[in-house]
Amino acid sequence: MNECLLCQQAIASTPSWQALLGLEKQTNICPDCSKKFQRADNKEESDILDRITSLYSYNEAMREYLHQFKFLQDIRLAEVFADELRTSLIGDAIIVPIPMHPEKKIQRTFAHVDELLTSARIPYMHLLEKLDTVAMGEKSKAQRLAMKPLFAVKKGTTILPSTYILVDDIYTTGTTLCHAATVLKEAGATRVEAITLIRAER
Image 1 (cartoon, rainbow, N blue to C red):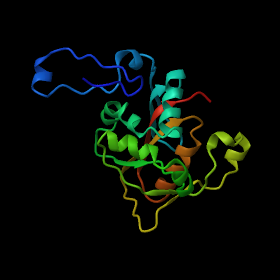
Image 2 (tube, helix red, strand yellow; image 1 turned 45 degrees about the vertical axis):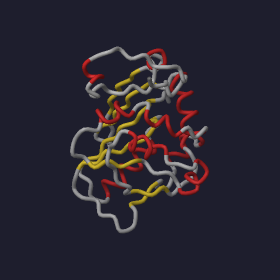
Image 3 (spheres, rainbow, N blue to C red; image 1 turned 60 degrees about the vertical axis):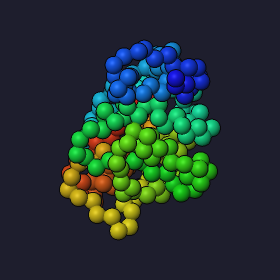
């Protein structure tokens, strides 16, 4: 019997032929915790990003999840939304996680977007490097508009004329994703989309 990754309560399973044959999909969180999350399934477009898809809203349950995962460094929680991410990233596009600045990665000990993709068993490529350590939430609108590029293509990397999907945990103003998409398109990408786990209100 599995334990819920969020509340540690036992997850009851219903006997079935799928379970007997080992074909039943494993559940990582219990029904009570699952229904606290609010699906967004939000789709947007911008001048730079050809499509932005966000899976969940930023409610209290998601805020607590993100705090425990990112800041309390509970890396097991990368598994919670693995099925949803895997379903959303089916296709032939090149998957590119939004990178952390090396200093931030040392502080946090792991790259949370990489772990989300790894838990979902989604192949990805590190094509970008982060140039700034300051989070977007710490900048005013005027500061965001006046910013220098946040990212650069990694040295020795070739950007093909293909479709790329950027992956990040949360989408608020869109500044981070737009900076990353601009760099990829200027380097040769023909289409850049983005998928985020969470859509936060501005």
